[in-house]
Length: 137
Image 1 (cartoon, rainbow, N blue to C red):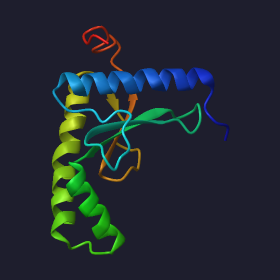
Image 2 (image 1 turned 90 degrees about the horizontal axis):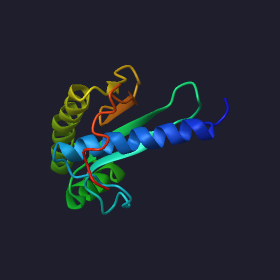
Image 3 (image 1 turned 135 degrees about the horizontal axis):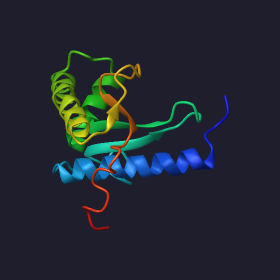
């Protein structure tokens, strides 16, 4: 398996930007460029292991205090901790909402990606370009 071509990386960066713009247009905070320990909101990352199956992965990160407490509970193997349950409930609420926003805008969601339940994989933007041009940069 080869790494992604430059052309694929350019296309995936464009798709990631379109996904971020669409979710920002819906009013969701986008945690672009921040370290995950201090970020909150939507995270969009390129998933392009090879040219045959490129896409972007979208996750939701709650406020850092809750996310960090959940991370500590995982490290302590305390999966029954209240913070873990709360974190999980937030994920179960947000990811379907994020997928619904993107699907309504015409993005293609890969429901068979085999990702953990806290992630949504997007493989294509709307044919009409979606929000391109709606948001000033």
